[in-house]
Amino acid sequence: MARPELKNFRRIVVKVGSSLLVDSEAGEVKASWLAALVADLAKLHYERRDVLIVSSGSIALGRSRLKLPRGPLKLEESQAAAAVGQIALARIWSEVLGAHGIGAGQILVTLQDTEERRRYLNARATIAKLLEWRAVPVINENDTVATNEIRYGDNDRLAARVATMASADLLILLSDIDGLYDAPPAQNPDAKLIPVVETVSSEIEAMAGAAGSDLSRGGMRTKIEAARIATTGGTHMLIASGKIEHPLRAIAEGGRCTWFLTPANPVTARKRWIAGSLEPKGTLTIDAGAVRALRAGRSLLPAGVIRVDGQFARGDAVVVRGPDTDEIGRGLVAYDAEDAEKIRGRSSPDVMMILGISGRSEMIHRDDLVLGGTRLAEST
Ligand code: GLU
Image: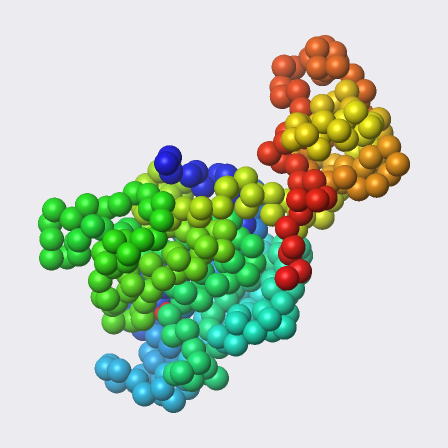
């Protein structure tokens, strides 16, 4: 299967590991690396995609601020270190995103928050509201209260859970390794990177060693578990190196990484996004023939539109209503309101004449359309 392209994703969770973010010698955040990453994130944000960050680093930063000796920490020590580090971490994200005019919202979750339905729905509603307000959620485990038996411990699986909770269509794990290899690359110079994993099979699981670095808890194993969580929940995942500057730009340009594909049709994920996450900017009222065509799986053509309401731009979400004003569905409209008004009720050749361009002829392409009956149960 071909590898997907970054530009097609609408809601992206980016997980940043401690060892990328925190310089273990200096004990401080790597400022210029972070600035470059945030420039990439800001680009996505201003392309009107939803961006969520899962950031590790609280324990690593805390231990350096507290000048704790190297070596493993006891649970209560890492909890206390996280208490100090998380404040610093939140401030850093708030400042670096703020420099791009983007608000950051801190969310600290525990395992129960993602596993108990009521709490899950709560956390999800908060995330949805932040995204609606165009703020970027910055998420970490609430390490100060999470005890051994009841915690994630690694942010790979946490990020996967958050991604499915937020109905994200892509999770990016930025790591100190550029993807999954068929053998441990450190010991094996012939090890090959696997560009696309279609199913997280037991063979794939066997390729994951247990190695983690000093600062980060997750090795390849937790990343493969994350891939399983994400892909069964309808979210594509990829592992890429975060050790370079502008890691997201590198992915967009086709750089090395491993994709884990969700078996759910990507259109479904996109439709879930259309149905569940957008504020409609206008309404198209269509005739009975167009209602039948849509229900038969076709696109909405200008000829079937009898009325255009609202101020929308090309690519905005609009509500589609039938002649009796019942909502039929929602979709991303291919024309802005002014052009839509000019071409409504007209046949495709007329549309070309009126607008003087030979653009797409659909008002809403069927891939961009979600009918009422097919809306996913977002409230479960
Ligand atoms: N939640 C931990 C922290 O912020 C990190 C877990 C991980 O490295 O995956 O320090």
